[in-house]
Length: 392
Image 1 (cartoon, one colour):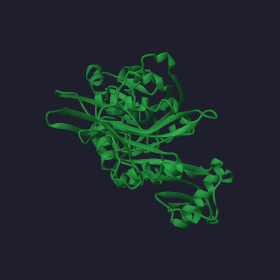
Image 2: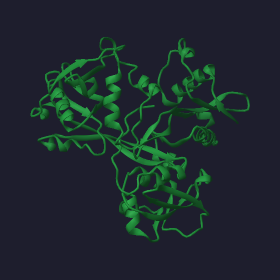
Image 3: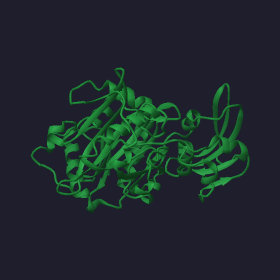
Image 4: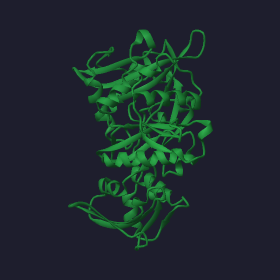
């Protein structure tokens, strides 16, 4: 088996293989025109592409920092090549490539949490789909102005609003030119029924929304909010007021919200809310030392020792002595059998450092063992706001 990055022709072969593995049609006549863009593959002894995936370079917000993250997508093995370790081999190569570029995390949308857990991934964000009647927003009023943004218009206002909004959420993509190109690629309302609006007060962008109609009957639609951001509470209320104006066209609104924005916070009748389509997005720590160094620590000075066990990436395995204070954060790695306050798997560590849960909840896991120094550890490992909406 040979594993390598793909050229343009091989990336087209991967797309064909994905159509078989994922059961979707493709146009053979135009498939050769698709660019490779970060594709990896495994080839059998005859030189045939039998497994592959894409690794999208998507920087991510993490405790106030922007860190490198590889978004894994399109993972496939052809039926005749499954259960041979191909994906395991590709992931090792991809992880090395991400780390070489300075990346700290990898994320993916799994078909099976159990499958990807064997490679060190763990659930970091539960993306619920909330549906509620648009009439529930009647109490809100839009302020300022709203305007539709067409393809080719300046997207600087989107970027400014999004950066203000997203930087407070762990796991949110810190969108660069590459990421924004993916978000904005399907935006012609006359061709693909995709709509984008920006709200402004005194010429300053305060919120935006992007949405598509979902047909629910012969003359009825739901509004699927595909992307949105706002600069503060007042901007959120104004955005909700704008969405209420769409009630004549859209009976319901469907939304995926950050972990700290449950619709029951702003709906007068939360009993009208339906919750479905939960997607458990997974994350993987590729560099435990850097993750600890960049992690937000509490005020004051303190120290703790944490043992991390990583079967898939043994370089992460060890006992880390962490000191924090006015000087910053100092992390020293020692032997795995050194004295420790907390012993965790790399999967549990991903949840702790990203803030999926606080330490008391993490202790319910079978792969987390508290030895001592509980008071300090409970201040260090706390629940944090998280959001992840970019697809790949």
